[in-house]
Amino acid sequence: QVQLVESGGDSVQAGGSLRLSCKISGYSAVTWSVGWFRQAPGKEREGVAALYSASGTAPRYADSVTGRFTISHDNAEHTLYLQMNDLSPEDTGTYYCATNVGLRWDDLLISSEYKYWGQGTQVTVSS
Image 1 (spheres, rainbow, N blue to C red):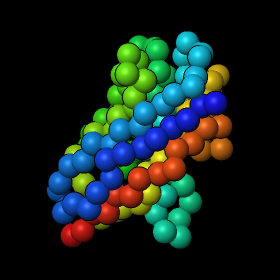
Image 2: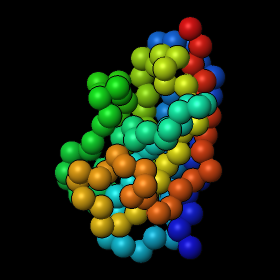
Image 3: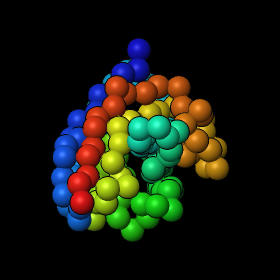
Image 4: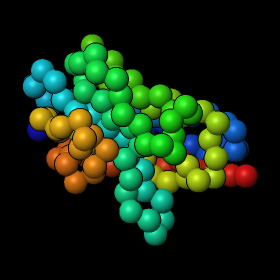
């Protein structure tokens, strides 16, 4: 049974930073697609950043976070991270990590392509 547990959400001022963590357990595949998604109240869930867990392929980022957010994966610790810098109120939302196998590069930021999800962690950015 694949399980994902996020942590690190908090309330911060605009311009601040946060690092989210996602502990993943129960998977046995060599390479998984792992990603971060977020959902603001009244809006659809959107892909933020994603990568292949055991590949040197560069991560994918949403245009809105490129240059501010960094996704990384610690294979030894089975943990996914999202370093978020220069946060703005538009970054407010519930952040979810997700994983699946066999995703194409073009599908890495599409939430419907992911099978396993965490419970989410809240990020609130005030101006």
